[in-house]
Length: 354
Image 1 (cartoon, one colour):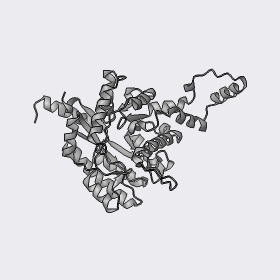
Image 2: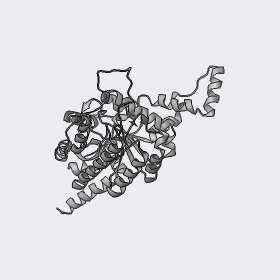
Image 3: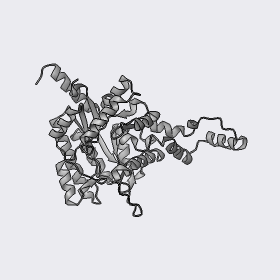
Image 4: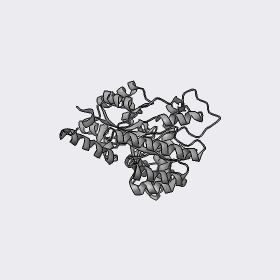
């Protein structure tokens, strides 16, 4: 099987651009979530992709992001990252897609950079952190950006960030291993309870790392939405139950609206999550049409990439169609520009073009 024609399409794949890493080093930032910023270059990345059957990767610059309490620096970093990502795509159009970095929390600057990234640079979507400066996705402050993403039908890759600092809490384990999972869950919950998912239905969201704690606690999150806006019919049923002590409904009859949002408004990548227990929880919530391949390169070492590939290949609850959907088809639907470039390359090879 040709990796380029039939392999995985990786939606969780980071480009730690040398210029970006150097700029962060100047302000004393050397890690993301307690994990040292790794080396990345396109040549080495493509070689790794070939070794593991990854046909294409959608590059992103995610945590620690571009905002470090300096809006001017955030604007410059976002533009520099996006220009460099676009160069990588132009050099390898059938192997790389790219997601724009935006200089939030400056919404006006983010809107300007979004237009440049999509209209001029032709990037494939956007990467947003779960929170910026303690403001989570779903915050009304970000509504103008969400409205524009909705108008453009943009795919948004949601990557976790460290939560707002709590001086009372000290863990010896890096935030990337625990807090990232919880911050993804916080962002998903806020997008849901804020009404953002329903106000802007044309935005497609990808949640990292199997959705963090979302699959295992989907019902609890849905009840949180219902606690805020419990339907009148449920209030009536609960009042009757208190009188009769008869509980005739299935547990999942509660929180239906929230569960529907979690099932239909998010996609979930399997970066660091292609294990029997994580996939079982994820598949209890969504079908293979909402699951995407992700590697977390280059933060994840190569053996983790190999285990992710093996985990999907050996997962018994995917049939062949489901396995292909997770491996590539779902991603190609979310990123039609990349799909078109890959198809052009295949046609050129089949036609004998150089």
